[in-house]
Length: 79
Image 1 (spheres, rainbow, N blue to C red):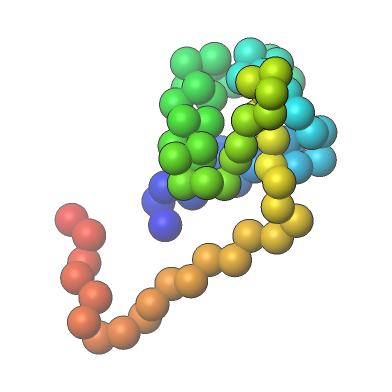
Image 2 (image 1 turned 90 degrees about the horizontal axis):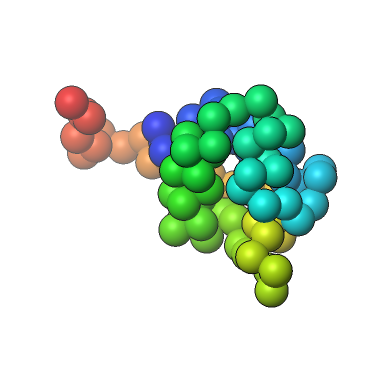
């Protein structure tokens, strides 16, 4: 769950609204450091939450994001 930090969720929602952008454009529009946004984008691409188009711009192809979080007794605590 920590993978989807507040900043990454903001990034996802912004891209969903704005459409296809480069990482540089995204960082500038969000007022965030390029290298940090690049790292966030890399993680979100690996998770399949972002995709790239033919021009290597990134975007969110989904209208909804559903997260399943098991709450069973057998969960181990993250340290």
